[in-house]
Length: 220
Image (cartoon, rainbow, N blue to C red; front, top):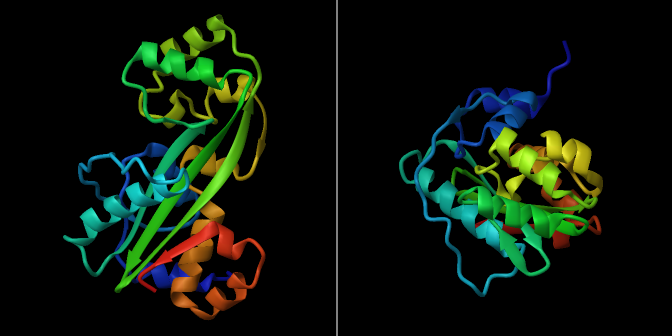
């Protein structure tokens, strides 16, 4: 059987997913990575001056560093996802009424889903983000109420999951990575993990047009 080198390298490392999200857990499992889950309660507050792409980077970094303090030799993956509607940051709704208000804002509009990811390993800390544009068709009050009652989307930024009923029937199109909307841009994560074991890939990818705009590195 053909083997993938960096996946074999990860088998020799304690890999930690610093997230309790069942979607991120499933995506990382499907990517063929062996890991364990370890989370700490961290305040999901951020400075008001941060730009929209900086918010999930900042929060993912806090989550990763909280675990790194106790597990300095582990490879830690932390992520945070935000939904941006115009200038509003839509976090997880507190209750049914807030979820309804969020979905009414998203109805018949485009919004951005931005996921920031931080990886810590052996003195390296690298963070990146990905953006997906999501376009909802008009959502009736009947659709919104049905979805909230049936799926209780209180653990999801923006009050919806793209893989759930409302995503299936309500989204017209997306521009970008579907899995990013679920909470983890898997393709970019794999790129970053590969570069940990093959640093020459850094130089190759930084020469592409997307590189400088999409990635922000810390401590490298």
